[in-house]
Image (cartoon, helix red, strand yellow):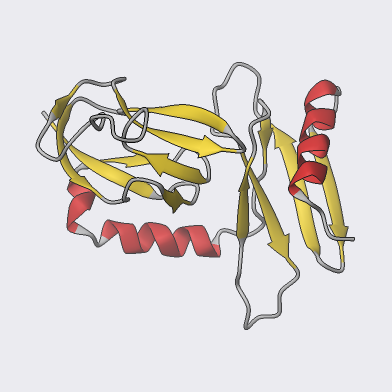
Length: 173
């Protein structure tokens, strides 16, 4: 059985409305694991569908999840460790990264044709809105994680950004 986005949304809602902390589903097509965030924490909600793979394959499909409290932990951390190692070797690592809080379309402005929230070289304060992410027809503001000057913008307006993708870098003051 192939899960659709609607199926996953229903599962997330069911988990969110229940007293369960975790929901696992698996078949020949892959595995889905949903976990609730710890009470009182504001996490970045994410769902990962991990396909059944052979050692040669390593594909991961990410789908955004608007339901509060649903978090999926991938099994094994090899891909994440590899990504972290790659990021440590980049010159931008000395700046504060602004990452995509969930998978979706990144927008630099509130409406098409409007002035972008930020430009390279612009000073921002912690918490200022620096962009938007649209996932499943819901818009989420992206706050600056630190105060400083926008060093670079890595993702173009209206481009898809996977969860955790660096959208821009801010050089802290």
